[in-house]
Image 1 (cartoon, helix red, strand yellow):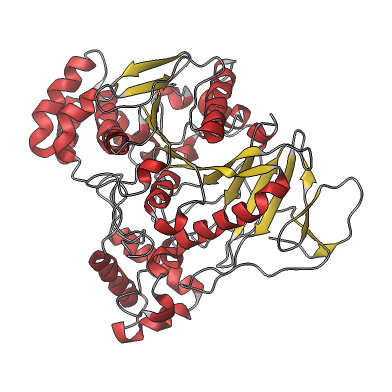
Image 2 (cartoon, one colour):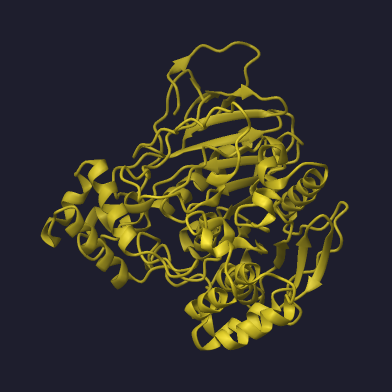
Length: 523
């Protein structure tokens, strides 16, 4: 959180924003400014511009993350399998990040101030779908340290605080509450447009990108009229955002929340004043009862169709107006879903009968075709590995391909990728799991050695991928450097860059999922 005003020394990096001067810190290879307030907001209401200040204010520590921690978590191990990775000997546990409704803060990493350069800007939207996560743990120093881009990460409102739809039950000043978290992101982008030049960034070359929920948020912004002109490129990593919530469904969720916290529909406005821990507990209870049935399902507390902010779904049934004007880089990892099996150890040891039963669960009448296709493609794989591949293709490769198809068919500049690098963690059973690309895109592979493994291969891959993403941020085209030619994605060929220990472009690598499961997309 932004610290009180203090005196400066001559060696400290000082930047002047529209609101006042900020003091940052010198990292080993760049400058970093943390906990910058980009807006303020009352519960369920639109964000407002931050107040100005006199003197110099410290920007040395991250601001608070949005409230999200469940005070009464379900029993058993967490579903995110990263919790099972071995920790280095004597390593201290990561510090618990502060959480607060007052969470509209961002962080900036820049190579230099006042050097006459205008670099592309890469604004990272964190994952965690729309219920959790934080930008406070992002490390933009790998990219900024090379000198070729400015990196920004943000915190914004989440779960019931950011996505409780009140327009139809309360209206008035709460009319935009169902998209409050997205209004926060738009406010952060306005702050970037107004201030990023002072940090050495080019406000005309802003790329918004994110993994998982961050990709979904990026997809929302592409289709949101008030967000037009705030960014020039989009990166959607393992987070296709085809559809969001319909108003009637969102209102029904709000009614469930009211009952959970002991209020009636007539008392809906009291949601704005009940204690934060009571609202958060109500959210967790409703969310536990409304779990998604597949990765792209958003059954509760997610963005809502709205005449102003989201007039129609971003990529369903086709690309929404305006989305094709924004170049998009989109893709996923080859074996995404092992990430979510931390509390499902049986998924890694399935026999043939168990594998077939699970495929029938998600594929229904298409199960025979899916089983036959994956038996032909992976004759030597265990049933568990075939299930991991089929379920990952169904969950992410299929909707990612659909979003790429629809963007390109509308005339958009589209580039597609797939990360195939196999994590050696936990005996190699994870494959190329969800979020594996994070430290590769940020060129910080040392931070993820537990997932990436030893040696030079992760270092080379991180440099290749991060440089491609920076080129895309700068020009809308990732080609250049030592990267093989990366063709634009077109629905007829579906050219896709595969990133592994080697890198190559291939045509339609997700064809198996598309041809056997197309009828299961329903979006």
